[in-house]
Image (cartoon, rainbow, N blue to C red; front, top):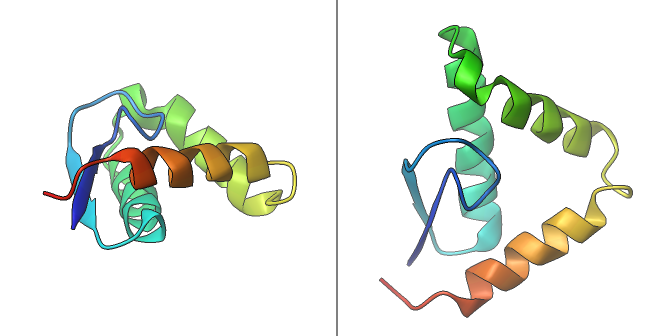
Length: 78
């Protein structure tokens, strides 16, 4: 199990997402950003817009995805 924060994944806060894989924490971040947007949290809006763009254009966003997978792989187990 490893942990990445919203900020490490491109967001504005220190909320921690835990998971067994990078995909787990990326999906948790997506849910967090959706919930923040729904709640009217404007501080997360830029990160939410970027995440929506990545889901719509996955080939263009492959660099970000690879970077996040590598960052996750480099983390110590928690």
